[in-house]
Image (cartoon, rainbow, N blue to C red; front, side, top):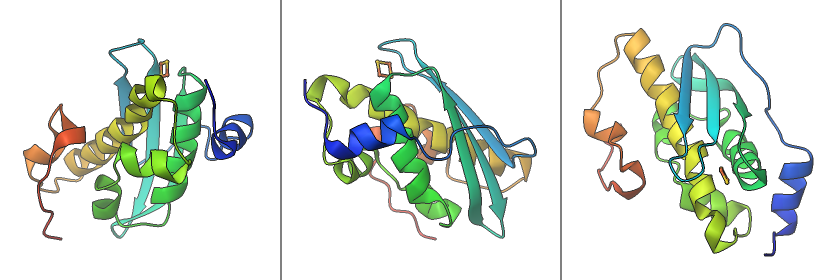
Amino acid sequence: MEYSEKVMEHFARPHNVGKIEDADGVGEVGNAKCGDIMKMYIKVDDGIITDVKFNTYGCASAIATSSMATDMIKGKPVSEALKLTNQAVVEALDGLPAVKIHCSVLAEEAIKAAVKDYYDKNGIEYDPALFKEDSCHYEHHHAQ
Ligand code: FES
């Protein structure tokens, strides 16, 4: 099994690891395939994700994808973070071994869960279809 250089870099020195005490949204998801857990914290200011941190008991691929995914959504509008797919993160990492693709879904789902938590806490209305279980396959158009 071969990991790309970028995966190795992000695994060795993951970005945005930790916890945000006064987070505006927290999402926790588990990977049904391996039982690993991911927790994601976001700080939102005026619709922009100003800070994001994660903690995981996941494997190297889960850590590398979360590191990359959090880099990709930091400073972006919440609506854009919701559109981040695990495929985009895997591409940004120059690929993952096929058997490890399921690990990359953890980051995407944790980001969505954190955003949903933020929406719920702030009474922001959203289309529930955005947060369907099979979120990696949805094809809705977001009109923000
Ligand atoms: Fe569990 Fe990768 S093996 S997240």
